[in-house]
Amino acid sequence: MIKVRGIERASIAVRNLDDGIAFMERTFGAKLKQIVPPGKDGYSYAPLWFGDSTLELLCPVVSDSLIDRFIRKRGTGLYHVSLRVDSLKEAIRGLAEEGYQIAGEHVVGPLENFAHWEEQYIPPRLSAGVLYSVVEHSEPENPRPIAHEVPADIQVKNVHAISIACGDKEGAWLFYSRVLGAKLLYDLHDEEERIDNLAFSLGANRMAFLVPHDQESVTGKRLATRGPGLHHLSLEVEDLDQAMAWVEKQGVRTLGKRVLRPWGDYSVWQECFLHPKDTLGVMFCLLQLTK
Image 1 (tube, rainbow, N blue to C red):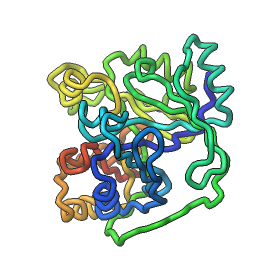
Image 2 (image 1 turned 30 degrees about the horizontal axis):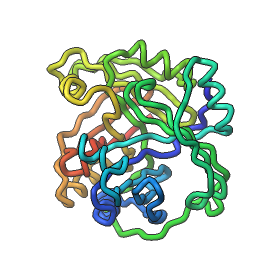
Image 3 (image 1 turned 45 degrees about the vertical axis):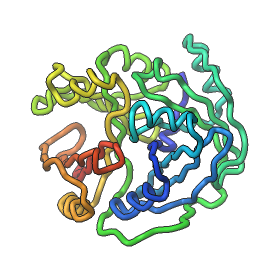
């Protein structure tokens, strides 16, 4: 088993880095950490603060690079998730003990404000269609660098959860619980959306499986056309109505507000999805939560 400390960040593939940064700053009040120039993999990227969490934008600068091929095949949107561990060597050993051999380049070196950074990737065929990098890094030299920010009338607290569309709940849960050490939070039937929603903790963070009851549900149609994999990011906000009004002012279509009482481990769960065609190909869900 891998001892996962939590989610380091999620990555979003975009076509234009400057436009992507401007959109995230203007729409969600994200704060730019820095812009990292392109390396040998042919893309530049920009990590941004979303409250206490980090999302990064990846932008190809070389034709036929990995990110360029991803965008040409699937369009812009969620690309991969980074999991933080204390020891990458121990994580690779833990995977091998469970019968999973990890191939590919082992990246080592300083990165951003980390003096030491190591990572290696878990193929998505092992993890319900999600590409993961397993990351070991030193403590940051500057805990919260901010290179640029713009005023925005929205208060994003964090990335509350990352949700995955999958058809084989039992098989996916076996890998996540046995190999990644996931802990079950709840497994609920959502009759309105016609899905099972299995939420779990992964270190200090949350993820969820969305398992459709049939192919006519929104998640079922997505699974049929795109296969299993990353579905949406949930952003916790201070005030959902205020956040909805703000993103609509920025030209982002909202897809209706839903209030659930109770839901999982919350007494009140308020949510609103945003149209992915307006948000760089990413499905975002805004949440206001009451314990």
